[in-house]
Image (cartoon, rainbow, N blue to C red; front, side, top):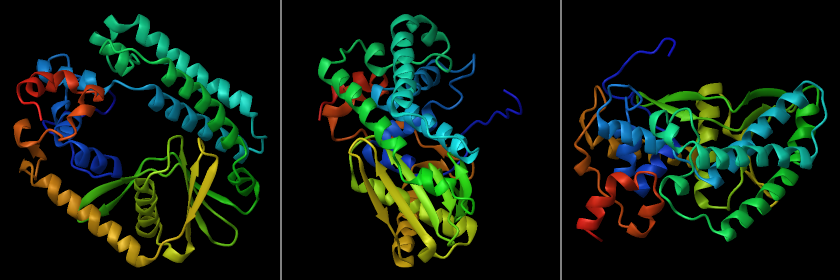
Amino acid sequence: MSGYVRREYPQWSWSFSRNQMFKSCARRYYYNYYGSHNGWEFSAPPSAALAYRLKKLTSLYLVLGDALHKSAEHIVERVIAGHDVPSADFVEEEVRRQLRRVWTSSQKAQELFMQRPNRVDMLHEFYYGMEISKQTIEKINLRATKVAKALVKSEIWEELRKPDTELVSCEQFDTFPLNGTPIYAVPDVLYKTSAGQWVIVDWKTGEEVEDNKDQVALYALYVVKKHGVEVEAITARLEYLNLDTVESLNFTMNELEAVEHSAIQSMEEMQNLLLDPEVNKPMPKEKFALTDARGLCPWCNYYELCREELEENPA
């Protein structure tokens, strides 16, 4: 890796997705952020190598979401360059091409995945020998059609075409500091209208859940902190492509302060499980509790690492 600097422990940071994982299962959080660290090295301990391999597993729903977001990014580039939005059929075929590629890889490259997990796509179900039901495949097929149609008719393409609209970022990793911690914020699209309104766009390929509002509220806090924008000048658009609905949100400073407080509280809870916060050294994995929702464990990437313990200590 160019410029790669080996670290004994991962760098400390915080993100909305990190918090979601921490709340759902502390053990899963441990494996994802600590147990898998340096597992890509040829000399990695077997436990780290296994955790890193399991971290790379994916699902059809994740593949569909990633493919749709890549298509959206390509459309942003096309529109900014003055080209037309592609047809829904074209976008749908792009999504299906990715789904087929990952399915084929999961069927035919399992041995290579064991050796080079960072170079091979592998579905969770194929790795664990679980059947993917016809119902799931039908849902994925229907969703691929629906999200492609909803994406190409999004109102933001007309906004981005306007000469006075400024594209600030698109799928760009960025951070802002909070209590000395880098906070990751990656809006799908962030643009500024001629009227000075900052618009956050977040495309969702799944169902409507309350956490999505908290996520875009964090993005709004990022815009305030990083770009010095007044909260009144920020609008967030949650576009539920599978549902063909859009929710526009505005926030108050009190709401963003609550988001900030919640993030700080989450960081403190995470750091309570560190032996040495200065270097982000975690406590032993046993200190990271298994989830009480044990029925979900077989669908977790790290089930192989927890299976024996789960059998010995069922909930």
